[in-house]
Length: 415
Image 1 (tube, rainbow, N blue to C red):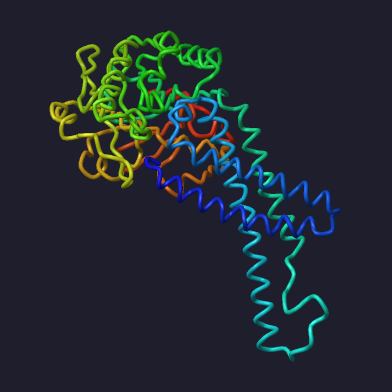
Image 2: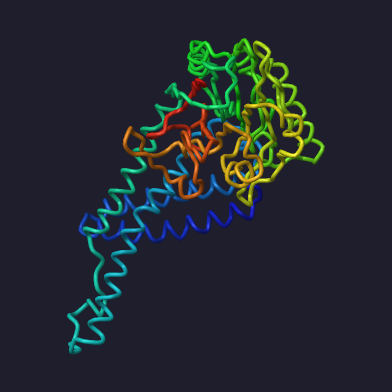
C-alpha cells in the first residue's frame, strides 16, 4: 500500500467491521450485569480506536515505517484483528440473512398479529451464531499469536530433480535456494545466524538467492552483513532482486533518494560476496561442460507489481547452452512469460509468496489463502520438461510468525 488514501479506505472498512461485530458483542452480553457489559464494550472500543489510530498514523510517521516493533508486531495484530472480525462477520451475516428471510416470510405468508409489548416486528439475533462467530474469530486471532514462535523455525526441504538434458558433469549438483530474507523484520540475530549454519551444513555446490533481501531500505542489512557474508559455495553465490528491494512501499523525500537506496542495495550484494544478476546471465563450467544461470529483476504478472525484469537482455548468449536455471522472484512470471516464450529454460526458482506464512501443509494436503492469488505458490510445479520451484521464504514481513507454512531452506539435487 503506497499512498495514504489506500490506508484511509482500509480504515473505513475496519470501522464498518467494528460496528458490525459490536452488534454481536451486544447480543452475547445482553444478559450480563450492567458493569460487565460496560467493561466489555469500553474495552472493545478502546482496542478498536487504538487499531484505527495506528493504521492511519503509519503513512504519515516515518518513525513507524522504520520501526521493527511496529512493522512486525503492531501491524500483525492489526491484520489479525481484521481477519478475526472478518471471519466472525461471515457468521453474523448468515444470521442476518436468516433474520431477513424470517421477517419476509412473516410479512408475506403469516396472518398479521399484534406484536408483544416491547418487541415490535423485530426478530432477535441468534446468540448461538453470535458466539460461534466470535469464538472462531477469537481462535483465528489466537492462532496468529501462537505463530510468533515459528518465525525462525527453519526447515530444510530436500528436492531431487531429474533432467534428461543436464550435462553429465553437473549430475549430482547440489543447489541451496534461499529467498525472501527480509532483513528489516529480524530482531533475533542469533536465530538468524543459526539458519545460516543450517544452510552451510548442506554443503551446496551453488547458492542461489531469489530476491527480497530487505523490506524497503538497504540500511536494514547493516546489522546482518557479518551473518550472511558467511554464505559461500564452491561455484559461487548468485542473487536477484525482489519487489521489496526497490523501496516502492515507503515514502521517499525524493526520486533521487529512492534511486540511491537501490544503488546502496546493489553494493550490499557485492559486499556480501554475492553476484547480483541484473537482467543478465553467467555460464558455469565443469569438466568442459556448461550450464547457464540467468537472473532478472522483479517481474510480476499481477498489475500492482512493476515489470522491471528483462528476459530479452538476460537470455541472449545462452541459446547454445544445454541447461538453464532462471532466478525470477515472482512465480507468476513462469506462466506469463517463461513457459510461453522461453521453453528452453529448464528450471525457474522463485519466492515472493511466503506461502502467505499461513496455511496447512502435510504430505497429503497443501492449502493457503495465497493460492487464490497465485497458481504456483509453494514447492515444485512441472509443465512438460520445465520445472518451477517456489521457496516459502527464509524471513517474514507484515506478520512476524508462521502458521503451518514454515520458513524454508531448499536443497535441490540435479540428476
